[in-house]
Amino acid sequence: MINALTRAFALGAAGGVTVMSALVAPSSSAPGDPPVVKTTHGPVQGVTEAGLHVFRGVPYAAPPVGEFRFRPPAAPKPWSEPLRATEFGPACVQKYDEMEVEEGGRISEDCLTLNVWSGSLNGPANPVIVFIHGGGFTSGAASNPWYDGAGLARRGVTVVSIQYRVGPFGWLDMSELGPRYARSMNNGLLDQMTALRWVRDNIAAFGGDPHNVTVTGESAGAISISALMGVPAADDLYDRAILQSGTAGTVATRQWAADVAGKFTELAGVGSREGILGLSAEQVLATAEKLYDSQFSDTAFHPVVDGDLLPRLPAERIASSDGPAKPVVIGTTLDEARYWLYYIPELLRLPRSYWQPWLESLVGDRADETFDAYRKQRPGLTDGQIGIAIVGDVGFRMPAIRMAEAFAARGVDTRMYLATVPSIAFDGAMGSPHAVELPFVFGTTAAASAFVADSDANRALSDQVQNLWVSFARGGQVGSATTTWPLYDTKNRSTLILDTNLRVENDPYPETRKVWGDMTFDGAHPGLDRITPLQFEGTNPYDLRVLAAVVGWGPIAGGGAALLVIVAAVVGLLAHRRRKRLAVGQQVAEPALW
Image (tube, rainbow, N blue to C red):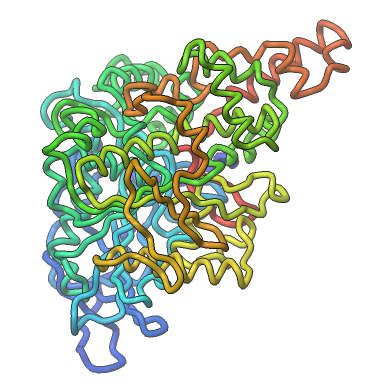
């Protein structure tokens, strides 16, 4: 989430640094030799690490460079000699950030690669878990050490992690340019679908079961899966789904995408979409940075209900009789939006008056009732903490509940979780924020030790969580050695509480759920323009109570000039873009709001 210094990086003539895997001689299948697997595009050579066969940087689509930028993914050119797949592919084009892709890290438009961890290339086929990373649709990489698939693979599943185009390269609406760009606002989604087709076609050769694929994602990755649930053509690409802190409640309209593209064109200083085609990758990226500082902030890019690939709101299809019926896990964290403290620690001091106009835009004259319900349900929270809790529930928890209700009403096997395990960042002030469950899913608490404690208790919890994810992927009864995870329904609302005391509770925090009544949280209400108070145009950072909460009354009373400086500083602070992923000490952390 913390904005890193912008550092220059070289991009090739095609618009990006093309980092291709090296060709090597064919390998024999003798014991001790590097593993070689034939794919539909050509053979790949991996590496054996601690008993696992690992393949990194495997291309699943052609490089979307040059004239193919802003176009749908295409099949890669076939190769005949084994392609060395021992290193992660470069991250898709994004700004260097020590918490994302460190200075000197590989960044390229040629980034459509995936990674595979497998315990065996022969014998009985294992269930497959495919992970889609988050990053607000503007950043992120599958090479993040939090996403190391080895821990899950050792539990008897084949793990795949994928990359997809981010920022304008994957989500900018260029449809004005004609049929070749008709789906450009959803190219990132098309990338993901292409990767999932690769899994169906190739994973058997890696020891995985192509008929048992669980797709999972966190934040933007989970929003992507929600969007895929609205795409009829994606129904046969997965068999189960796990959505971690991302739902169908945050998708963009066609008008939103067009407005974003119009603003992008203006900021780029070109007269039309045609002019964007002539920009270098550096120029596209620089324009994107300006866009993120505009009114669109970190909501600029999301899957778009374009009437074509995504015909209608995913939430509508999920609730309909023709919607997807695959078993699903849906979960959130208790304090989703407290990750904002990495940006704006002053949020904890903001008065009720800051949150009130935004809340009134959502619930009208029931704003006070809603605020008070949170105070009653969680009596230890300050006004600032209550405001942050409401933001987290509007963006994550309530849309997740609405999805679970819709699935359960259709008889779809649905399970819910709520992560309440604490983060140690900010001396515990973050509570259980966005992404807190990720190190437990992947067994990477050591890599995330500045964010969650790498303690015996947390490692034991990680064992249980991994067993739950694997048992879900296998099918049948879902549970760990000590916990059975029942299905969700609107009578009991059974919810797994993901904490060191792993347990199931019925309807946790019922008052803060009930106070929202029948509000849909379906992507239309609220839309992206009201998903947080920082997007909402009615939020007033000039309110003296807000200024005083941030800087204190003393400086405000010091004079007009000082007040102008304070106003400028606070407005900039509270309107600051929040597009980056969590920054955790010196560790690579997980995605921002989306």
